[in-house]
Image 1 (cartoon, rainbow, N blue to C red):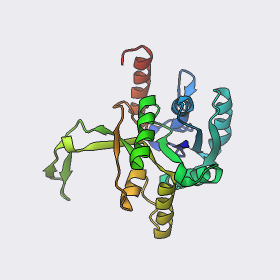
Image 2: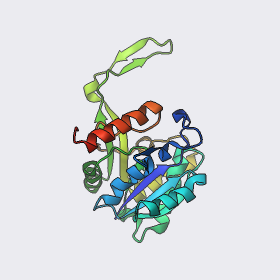
Image 3: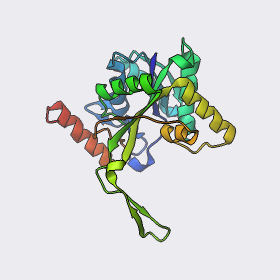
Amino acid sequence: MNTALIFAGGVGRRMNSGNVPKQFLELDGKPVIIHTVEHFEKHPMIDSIVVVMVEDWIGRFNDMIEEFGITKVISVVPGGSTGQESIRNGLFEIERLSPVSPEEVTVLIHDGVRPLINEKVITDNINCVKEYGNAITVVPSIETVIEIDDDGDIFKVADRSCYRLARAPQSFILSDILAAHRRSLEDGTDYIIDSAMLMRHYGAILHTVEGPMENIKITTPMDYIVFKAMAKARENGEI
């Protein structure tokens, strides 16, 4: 069984979008979160979707699900006080609703504000989990990576061919990622937002799949402008 966990529990203070969370900004009359969810809705290997949402906007999002004909969303749960807690809320809901054991569920964890994914990266994530037990979507580092010391001076210039940028989806066997979250609750480590970082913290060997370079996270006004431009370019067949 393959389930998508879409988390959109933040309010996007860096976006400067007034009272509208960034996941509800629109392109062609359709909110970013719907653009994102539709990739999983339309994918033939995805069985269900759970969404973690800003609590005050759950009602509006439920209306959108109906408006845009989304049928695979089986639950919408409120986000927590941290990104890690929001993801955990969604994972616990998937466990609660799953008709099969957690060992039989692949969960694809994805940002609600990463709407520029594609069918291939979803398929590659599912297949990688089947083969290796997890999948972290990455893109090459196309800029030079440097390390600095406490004085702000360059300590090391890294070989960027050895580096990748982690993106999403980040996908796991549900029982494995649940075990990591439960350990973090016991340890009091509630500050690890990224799922790959959390799994690595507890010793997991992680495997990568290459994703599209345009798979950006909409965090700032510039990201939103890039998203609109890329979406139009896709629509016009330019990329």
